[in-house]
Length: 148
Image (cartoon, rainbow, N blue to C red; front, side, top):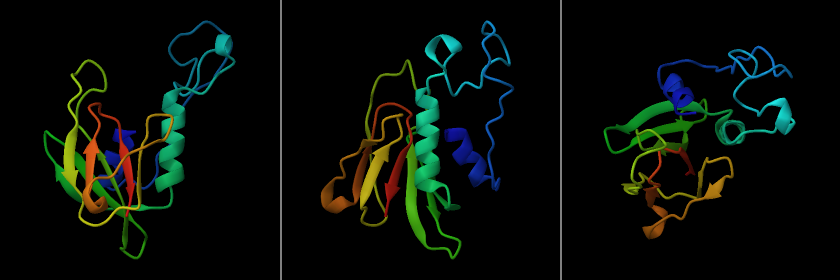
């Protein structure tokens, strides 16, 4: 998901998740998409699928506008409509999602936010701080979408 957002920043307008097949043969390279489980799980949707689905639902028609920041603490991008109005921010910590100690990172939002969600496969709502202009990124590298 973070790679998809970085691709948007680089000017790529569309992303397609390629897969060969979700078939019943034993697991090996090119037998599953990575978005669903194996035939043993009934091809159950993985968290990756659900998180990507949430990203598309929340930002699918939006365009990358600009970088707020890209540093070792946080990456924050502005997204909005085709006319240039900024409507969303996306933010994440640029770390591996597993194996690092949880260290939440507070960030200041450029304007008041209406809502925010952690795209973790469950769409966990994120609490906004002071006057809805502060956000604390979770300790993981999961993406947060903020509606402005």
